[in-house]
Image (tube, rainbow, N blue to C red; front, side, top):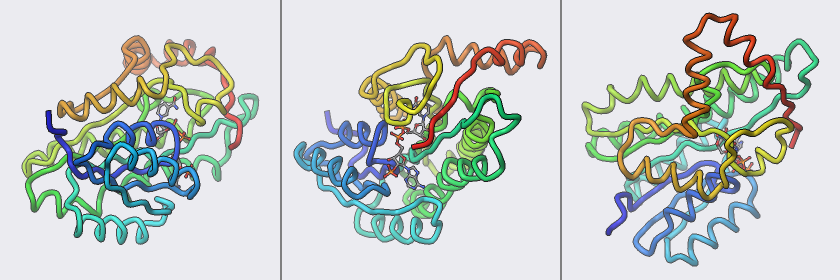
Length: 259
Ligand SMILES: NC(=O)c1ccc[n+]([C@@H]2O[C@H](COP(=O)([O-])OP(=O)(O)OC[C@H]3O[C@@H](n4cnc5c(N)ncnc54)[C@H](OP(=O)(O)O)[C@@H]3O)[C@@H](O)[C@H]2O)c1
């Protein structure tokens, strides 16, 4: 079967889920645009994709740099009209569970990368995708988008914002025949999870997570959220009276160490 997406752009392709997705989309008829910051790791992903027969362009870009991100994306799209754009780059923090808050600077950094960085990635290509009346945008949020967790408020805010942004885009873009997939994964193995010091229920391997995400995107799903017990549990915490959700989540104590 021919892959549904021939030209795929992935941010955060130098590590974890983004690298696994890049390899999964790397087929001989695929053209990939891979964005990351770490040149050596991004090149390792690119080489693995080329070995699978894909044509690969890489770009070292910080997605918080809106103009650099837009300019590269528009240039790439001009040469290779993009079928699928995956805004996956992300960062996490949750420095000290005993401190009253994580601090404005750390919260702002996560919102800058996870929310504004994803918007910087998605917005520049929307006019072209809509004009072609074809394509799909996927954003990687998190199950943390469903209910704020006490020990990583900035991360949860960034992912809740990203989820709301993409859910808002979906009906708007549907008129132009452009699809939107909101991805809300639970825990999976990755360098980000290696820095997570706390319980990781229903932890998946990075490859299994990438397989679920890719299958959902390829099927045109509007939402891809897993594992269901965590999704349902957090949705329950959101719709239950606040004191119940607060009481449950207070016990989900963790710390996220700096990279
Ligand atoms: N791991 C989990 O359990 C989990 C669960 C739910 C959601 N997620 C989300 O899934 C996505 C992938 O996470 P992961 O676990 O694969 O993490 P990871 O291994 O730490 O990879 C994060 C990727 O994002 C890139 N990135 C970070 N900041 C960037 C910036 N400012 N500009 C450009 N690229 C940037 C990194 O690039 P460099 O390394 O080159 O800087 C790296 O490629 C993230 O959005 C994360 O929030 C993860």
